[in-house]
Amino acid sequence: MIQKTREKFIALFGKEPLIVVSPGRINLIGEHTDYNDGFVLPAAIDKKIVYAVALNDTRQCNAHAVFTNETVSFSLEDVKPTPGWINYLMGVVDQLQRGGYEVKGFDCVINGDIPVGAGMSSSAAVEGGLVAALDHIFHYGMDRMQMALLGQRAEHTFPGVKCGIMDQFANLHGKKDQVMRLDCRSLDFEYFPFNFPEYKIVLCNSMVHHSLASSEYNVRRQQCEEGVKAIQAMHPEVKSLRDATMQQLDEVRDQLSAKIYDRCAYVISEIQRVQDATELLKKGDLQQFGQLMYATHEGLSKQYEVSCPELDFLVTLAKERPEVAGARVMGGGFGGCTINLVKQEEVASYQSYIQSRYKEEFGITPDVYVTTIEDGVTVN
Ligand code: GLA
Image (cartoon, rainbow, N blue to C red):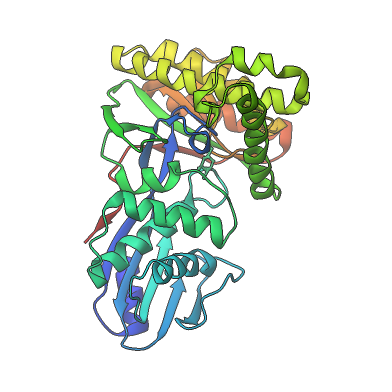
């Protein structure tokens, strides 16, 4: 794909480009915890966006997307939210300009194999890849965390999703065969080897794209803030759900709607689960780790309500299979993939089992991806 992207760039723009590879991500556990100052356990994967980029000595940016076979141009004097994939690029350029980083005209070709809307964070990959490319070309000297934070702001302001930092962080900090535990409050992180050669990370795509995903995501965030406000009135030291205990939440239960209570209860338990899961991972206990993944799914489905019948069905199928250590919906939810830890020698039979049962139930064949953990954004 790198070679094809480069060739396309040369054919369109007639010069040699810089190549940047920007991966998607998985998250083993810790969902909807990042914007609550909690912990997450993500890793970058082998699905990626590839950029070919070079300066063009104008005030114009020209971007060609291989996946839509379309070229879109915009002026550096007129960067504003715009429908379509170009919005993600313009969001990054806008944040750079606002941050005082000088941007000059550039040409780029963008290619990739991260399925859109599948929960692997293609948007963070588009953002992180472009920030890293422009940082290299213009010598901004940004570090990876600055790039991640800039990508997150771009996501907030242009597509308008008030996301946490997990996706942009994972995209830019990934390391081959390592998962990362990020403290989303301090932004401290540690790498852990994901050293289970007998298991594979398998993503099963429900093929559901929920059109409400981004608006409902922002609603979840507000609901968490509402819960924090109520707890804060009694416990001023509680700044986010990271600081709250179940006992404190119970103290304000009668002031909260059942929905808000459930949302907060899920987040408080999930933040603890990531801590417990990390210990299990360090001990090499993938079976217990998998049980926590199922508990996360239960919470995401019943308390946080970001699952759907298709995703629940995929997890129910996983639970019936002894070769699966654990499974759950991954990412923001409302569609997209489940993440499954599957015994290596059973991956092929698991895949065909899932595909045929899902087809019987919903009439479509789900895509299944066997992923590997790879490096974060690389600039060549
Ligand atoms: C999306 C967001 C992340 C995170 C997850 C849920 O992927 O971009 O910041 O909140 O959902 O864990």
